[in-house]
Amino acid sequence: MTVLHLADEPEAADLAAFLSRLLHYDRGAAVRLQAAGTALAVFGRPPSFEVLAIRAVRLAKPYEDGLDVTLDTTVSAGEFLEAVDERAATVAVPGAVTGPPWAGVLPPRVGWQPEPGLPAPDALRATVAAAVTEFRSRTQELAPQRRHRAELDRIGRDIWSREIGRTRLPVRAVHAAQSLGFLRPGTEPADTGLLSSGAWLRLRTPYGSVAVRRTGLGSLGLSVH
Image (cartoon, rainbow, N blue to C red):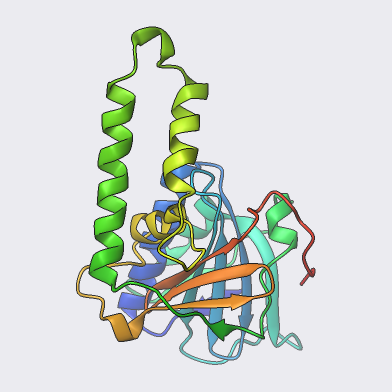
């Protein structure tokens, strides 16, 4: 079994926290792992947000498993979490699983360009808080006969699909970043950024990134990695 040596205990703890948050939204979640050199990228897709979450993990030494110098596999998020040893700062890679469709296509690796107009982190968190308050208010005002899944989903789509200023970044992407622990209090504006590549937008923070297609993730017309 392949064992990855993480940079330190905090790195292991952050990885475990990220996996726990993914599993909160989907107990059967899968994650795609890509390791090369001293970096491990963990990709996940929390279904509630329709975004791709990317957590970069620092390794203590360059990845190598025999003659293989790169790792690319899709595994159970739950099994991967169970394999994290925070004290030893290691994680064993479980057996591969048949991944969901999103795991077969990822955002581009190169070609990202900065996009202007991203508000400061505090303003982004305030936008999410206001959206949550609006959702609760509008759903509570519904007559009992209208308080069904279709109507709740309609209200949710109306609120979470709104764009942040003129950035084209949907509010749901910022909500995902905050819910997954990427947009933490105290994050400096200089440490966050909005990037674009083709049809993709990516919100980058020191703790992880959230990528979203401008037309949603339903279309899989992407390059396969």
